[in-house]
Image (tube, rainbow, N blue to C red):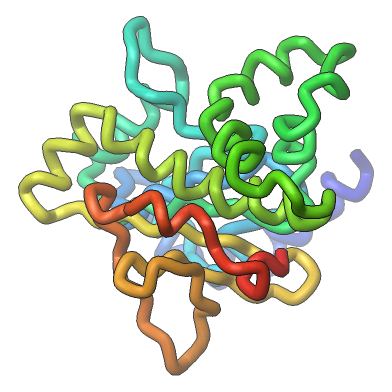
Length: 231
C-alpha cells in the first residue's frame, strides 16, 4: 500500500500537471473510440502497451477476457458492452487474450478449480473454447493446448459479441469493427486475427490489421498449423 500511495503522490505532483488540460476536458464527459475487453491479469496493462491517453479506451477486464453470450437478466459485462456501444458510440471493439493465461489453464483443466467454485462457474461460460480445443488438438502437448486455448478463446468471444443486440445492430450498419488480439507478456508483441488470412498476424509497422467481421469467422480459422501455435 505504501508503494501505491507514493505512486499516487508522484502522479499528483509530476504527471497530472502535465495533462491538466486533458483532465479538465475529461471532467465533463468521455468519448472513447475503442472498447477494449481483456483479462484481469495484473501483467496485462492495455493503456501501457497501446500507449493510450486517458479517455481513449473504455476497458472491461475479467478472468479470461470472456464475453458471455447475451441473455436476460444481463450481467455486468453485458451491461458495460451495451453502454459502450449504444451510449458512448465506440467504433472499435478489441478482445485481447494474452500469453501464460492462468484462466485458460483452469478452463482446460476444470478439476483444478474445485477450491474456487466461483472462478469455475465463470470460466464455464467459455466451455465452447474448451470443447474446440479438446476435439481438434487431441494429440498435442500441454504447452500447445494452452496456446490453442488462448487463441481459440479470443475467436469464440468475438462470436459471442454477435449475440448482443447493440453490437449486432452496429455491425449490420457497418459502423462497428471487431478485432481479436493476443498480447505476449514476455516480448511486448501483439498478434491480431486477420479474417482474410484466417490467422493471427504480428502487428508491426509494416502490417495494418484487417478488422474481423464476425460473420467471416470460419471454423478453419480455429485450427492453425503447429507453426502458428507458439504462444
